[in-house]
Image 1 (cartoon, rainbow, N blue to C red):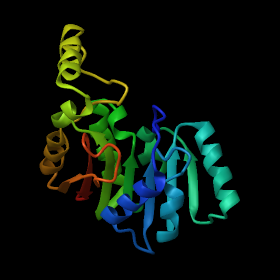
Image 2 (tube, rainbow, N blue to C red):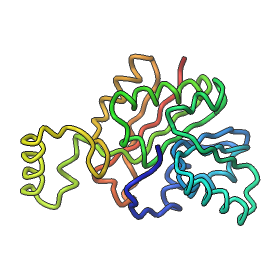
Image 3 (cartoon, rainbow, N blue to C red):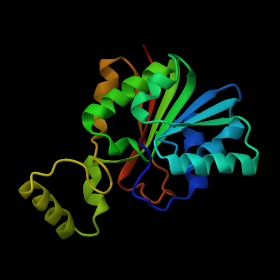
Image 4 (cartoon, rainbow, N blue to C red):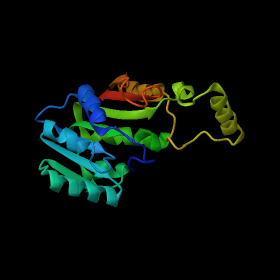
Length: 212
């Protein structure tokens, strides 16, 4: 899987927000899962020892590799693969820090849980897992410009028996991720996005302290 739906993002601001929350260190080995064209990875690369990006889009990986060559980025490696096989590409405890931005919401609930398991496997004990830019089901109303539009969509989805993915992916209740982490005794923080971020009024981030 990779980031989808082609929204316009200010990558510099997003990278800075991730950096502030995750606190990369110079000896870190980092995973960018669903890296797309490495627009975020290239900004994080100078802060760590090595960064690996994984994405299933051949076109985006090629773009990212071209960017690496043009900008002389030597500590970044990109892998063409589906996110669901990340634990087949990398061995257990490979990464100090792992993150997935823009994309987590495009996986079904079952696959989201599988993906978290896989991220936990490839991230070392006491390492950090960051999931960003998730549409917040408890704040779905904030996405719509008026209550009328919100209730019209809600009624339409009920009539059509639509509980699943929309253009923004799946709307996710933060409690889903908290419950998953607590069952595994992992530390978890639901983090609001900076007010400077364009979608802060209806999206959230998650920082997980890995435990095995």
